[in-house]
Image 1 (cartoon, rainbow, N blue to C red):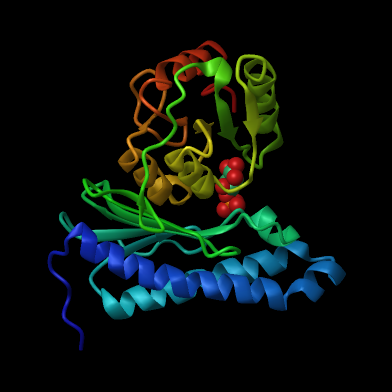
Image 2: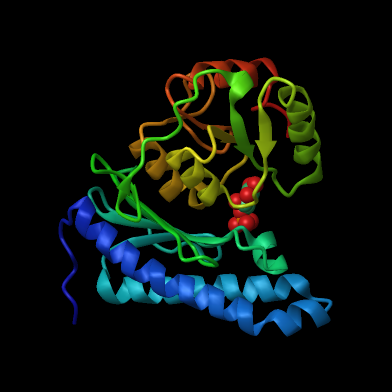
Amino acid sequence: MNEIPVVSTPGELLSVALRIAREAAVTARRMRDEAIGDVQTKSTDTDVVTAADRAVERQVVEALAKERPGDGVLGEEYGDSLSVDPGAVRWILDPIDGTVNYLYGLPQYAVSLAAERDGEVVAGVVINAATGDEWTATRGGGAWRAGRRLSGSERTTLDQALVGTGFGYDARRRAHQGAVLARLITRVRDIRRFGAAALDLCLAAEGSLDAYFEKGLNPWDHAAGGLIAAEAGLTVAGLSGEPAGDRMLVAAPPALFPALHDALVELDAAGGP
Ligand code: IPD
């Protein structure tokens, strides 16, 4: 029987996350490739995604249970499988972030896996399962992609900023998000909606987007990507002093954050359903 792991450093947790997320990304990609016929011919489009989501999550949960039997897991498909004791690790998993892209075969979907201890994310990895690109971070250890340390965009003014965002699935929420965007788009360089929040955060971390914001994210959408953005030096927060969470998450370099924050407050971006 396995020993329950006691304490692990963020670096050790990242090694576990990376190994397991890589295998998960291979499964996600393979299931997508194998299911192409189903996606195109069946009326039950979403079943293909749900089956892949579940299979990837199950694989990760089983791998974690084997390697780290004392840890908890919060996952998109199975929910919170364990409550964790103080000091214990809870893994936060999005088996496939960007499920609509996955359905359409757009190469912007990811496995996101983070390790949290006492409510603080300490290690995280996001892998674009279609391309194999990987972003990692440990708390205090910086954010990295392919051996390069990330430091975000140097943009300082909102009117020059390329800003990523996303929309929830609920129509009433979307109506509010659309109204906010209609007024924000005249104040920024442009808007991007790529469809996978975890990857959007990584793009902001590496400066391919100047900033990113979204209302309504779940913990598994932003746990790993949020740490990667923060470790790249971005401010990752909610509005008016709130922490980043489902009401709002804004990720922007410190010089750009106040202007985007104030515009979002003015437009009531955290409001609505
Ligand atoms: C969604 C994506 C999308 C974001 C949504 C998320 P899912 O996650 O990250 O970009 O705008 O808010 O729910 O459903 O593809 O895992």
